[in-house]
Image (cartoon, rainbow, N blue to C red):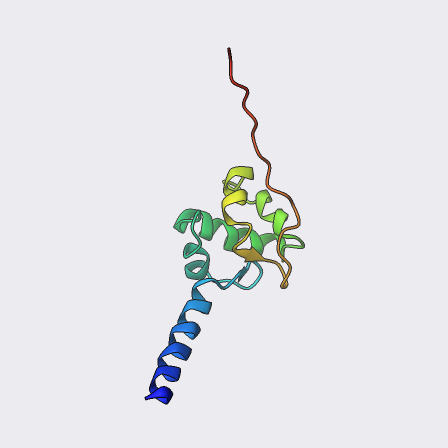
Length: 101
C-alpha cells in the first residue's frame, strides 16, 4: 500500500515539474514557445524566425528585439524563459500612479 502511494506521488511530482519547466529561447521549438502564457503562434514563430536569421540570443532580454515583443510581453514571459540556463536579471518595471485629490 505504501509503495503504491509512493508511486502515485512520484508520478504526480514528475508531471508537475514539467509544467513549471523554463524554456530555453535558443533551443525551443515553436510549439514549446506557444505553450508559454503570453506567447501565441505568431510571436512564437517570430522568435524562431528571428533566431534563425540572427543567431542565438545572448540574454533573455534580447527577445525584445523580436518584432512584436516589447516590455509588456517580456514582463509576462521572463520567468518562464531562459538563455543557456540563465533567466532574466532585469527587475520588473512597475508603474506608479498617484491619486488625484
